Length: 291
Length: 287
Image (cartoon, rainbow over the protein chains, first blue to last red):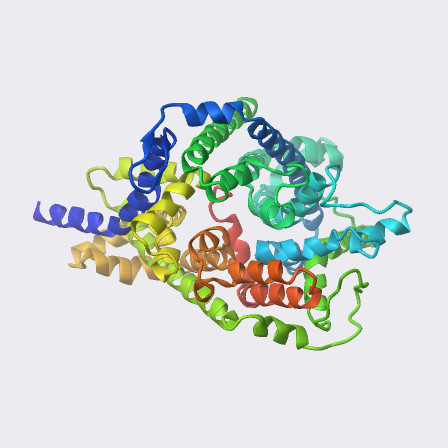
């Protein structure tokens, strides 16, 4: 009996630090954000203003625009990224282990470079002058000069291209691990039935890696909704707020205009939207997979 | 037998041709994805002159380290930024491995009142978007605790992440309980069990955790950017951003700075590639 007590004491001691960090740096901030969202924040004694922050947010046309931009960004980034990484993973599969790891490393390397460093490189790739890198390439194909980050038509797609490139490596590695986990007997059975390569992909591989696809989709969508850094460093949300996404909107509310209360209200709305999306995706995908 | 058709020995050449074709396509795609990094490194060896519209080339015309000198001369704190990043990332990595192992073990192998509820809370915490916590955290650190521009401000919020606790718990659950039971019979105390049995059996997963934590902390921009105003306390990512915003036309030095910020991670990657590639799949593919 005494021994049991001792184990319990050790257990609490072991979880003490994570529990404290969780309480101070997650639980307290969440509660505080909820409270602040109903206040006009002042360093000494905030003022209670009811739902004003939420009402202002819903009246703000930029809020809807940023949500639309976030959605467009996510809808463009996620499916393209998933499809590309799935295809590349399949293509890496026939090779020997050593060659596989060379390709894996090559595709993963951009994910290791810091986002800040990469954003500078891309800024120069997107240089609007005719001598700019992407413009020179396009010039060969007879496409006229584009102001990549500076024009409303191309700014968003420029950010999307960059995000797809950076996210590819991680997805590929996860997909390959899932593909290597498929039991060869499935392929044998498919071969017996005279299945073509495409049929094997469609009826064997795709259903079997579905859990991985779901996991990657949900995490990519959540990341897409929270994206902030590239827009902040590359376009600053411009031109004309065409690339202002929810993450940047909230950041600007808080740290440019110091409207802490409204920023918290917007963040909570965003969190709600993300939660709804995650649950929906989970429900939808759970329905059509049969294990 | 596999996904790809196996050819008989007579038709070996078809298989070879197919694989070479696939390899060429993959190589071309890899060239495109690696291009930004290649471009960054190559350009960093250019001369530190204002680029303003001058043509920059894909093949190095010259090789000089002047741009690196330019970057380090820009601020007296340039070296300090790199040092700061190292200090913060190292401390965060160590604390994460230590505390996540201890907590992961407690959640995996010890039964205590509230263990399920607390673990569930940590799981939920992983899903809270950082936008929700950013403002209160900023107020807490800057206005309440008044510790901006200090190492504790940079380190404390990620002292041990819920994700790492979760990771450790998942792995430790797969360790045989019988070993732990028999160690207890022999009179081994709980901390000794963690130190002598659990950690040696989990070297791979803990190395993966350490590497991924270090990488994430080195590359993180947002939090250090919020809480570090004084130049001396900035990390390399924040310093790099400030450098580039102040020298928008100095192309080569900017690339030199970017290379400096990325280089330590590249070195780490190439020396510990196996752990990196494993780290990505840990927690993603259910075993």
